Image 1 (cartoon, rainbow, N blue to C red):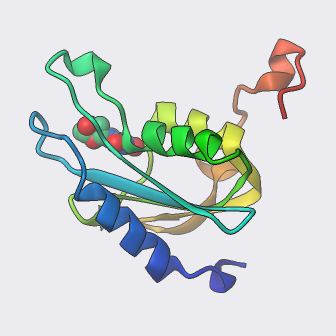
Image 2 (image 1 turned 90 degrees about the horizontal axis):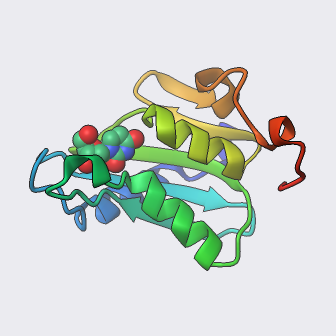
Length: 133
Ligand code: THU
């Protein structure tokens, strides 16, 4: 399945998104991109703030784009930090897990993996007794 996805194009989209990063504090420009199950490619960049804890990761912007563009499920995801693939932070793994299609693949520095592999036994809507999926 990983071979069916144009990972070079997805990573190029993430790199282009990183050009828009607002990261004057960390100087760590992040961009991410995901392929949605309807064929859309969505992107995000990090947006920092002088109040550091308010910083938005690239994934936050991207998940906003997912919903603004009509929703859907992510089938492939890549994130780059200062030009290199990185694994998403803990909070963003949680964000991705709720938006992921079953079997969504992530490109990481150590290869391809699923969200379940990097966020095992995740918290989800089932625990709330709601049916948000
Ligand atoms: N960052 C992201 O945008 N995504 C991640 O998954 C990890 C961290 C950003 C937040 C902050 O602007 C900078 O990287 C340094 O932590």
